[in-house]
Length: 400
Ligand SMILES: Cc1ncc(COP(=O)(O)O)c(C=O)c1O
Image (cartoon, rainbow, N blue to C red; front, side, top):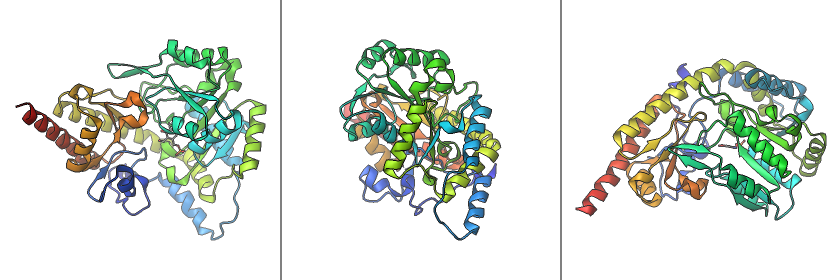
């Protein structure tokens, strides 16, 4: 697909990825820096989404907009088609993003000082948002073995005894793990044993590489499904983060009522005029686009891993089972995060995410976003290799 090949000039589009690097990385000038950090893609949205939004723009009145039944149908049908997960339309609530959705859940179902359990290294807002709401965050680090992550169920069970909520990243960002059905069932069993509410963030659930399969947690939860609130969105899948759309799904009537009350109390729950049409077009018409995207992302991952590991001795990268994010392990090189980030930004002119953002368990790792045209990826990889080569040269000259 040509739209995956063409490079887009995204500077001066109010893009966080391209236009906010000065603030985020504390730089005077980031105009030469290639961003490979925050998780959005450098690809245009699928044509049917653009067409639907242009059509909407043709009508010049932008009065109040509500979530029509056809949006709910589109979400339901997509989950049935992609994951064989049967959800009812009345289980859905709409939000302006997964982050606001998780915030709503925490505010609605926990009290100040309640404990929220997370499994780092993990998507930072899980713990930052909980802390900012005055909740206590407890951590059960994942076990890392040769680049593969697993739950530490012994530690997890111990921590669950004090927790009110567990936030699961399914599949996992940044490790790219697609949890197996048996791992998910063990999570459900333990959360049920200690009566813990589960938030299952499944925003990356459409970005899965063969032969892996996404398993929606609530789909396999049986009688325990009411303790789960699933977060979904078309925004990661179809590159629509700036349009701001997300959904929560819960089969528990009482939880639905409480989420309704939350929406009434905060004036939330609607989608803007463009979000509704984008959502409907994405889920109804863009499956072929997604299939093409997955092939391209898979190739990008293979390419980046091969180039980086063959040119920089000591880097270890496991191919992710999902997402377009590479989790690069440089611990063997023995360098500090500060040194590596400085070399990447100042000498390589490339911005990656420092692993410590994802919790202490992320120290010694970098997160690279590989969702860009091949040409951009090649340039980015070249810059990373250059920065690491400089690190090697400096260390060698010090040890001489
Ligand atoms: C696991 C996870 N949840 C949520 C988000 C952000 O969701 P939203 O943009 O809908 O707030 C991201 C973005 O990278 C993510 O990786």
